[in-house]
Length: 174
Image (cartoon, rainbow, N blue to C red; front, side):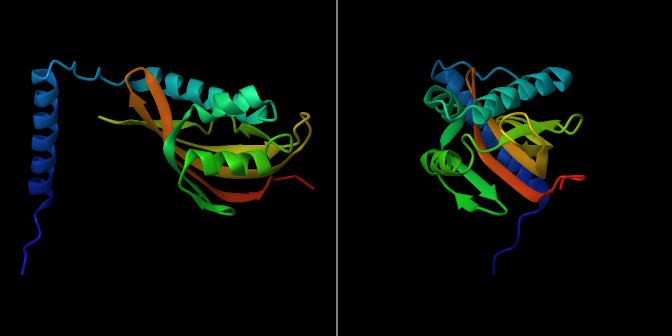
């Protein structure tokens, strides 16, 4: 029977693999990835990504905005939605967006709900709440929670995993 490796042993192996990968990149003449921004700088960066993502989402009836929206997602994005199920690719996710969102709803971030956490060697995790409103600036009828995993590749940031869940009526909505 195989013995389970301790947490410390698994962590040591992971650290050794990461160091070996960085050493190989340096030896091959590839620069090591710059460190992630920290604290408020990372929060500001991810808040800006959220703004870009949902500004284009809110205007996706315009094909140029839909293309801008698509560019913020990895080709193999995994999108988990508690009402719509799971999509495994950017193209399928965009089909759902075209069909269910464009010209029909507008998304607003709930003020003060955004939280950002670094994911060393990968990017960042964004967590928050959002409202879904009439596209013309009218009333908001729904609310949900979300998690977006952002991957940094050089200077580019793309969403690789999205969870949208806990959808419910907006308090006070009729």
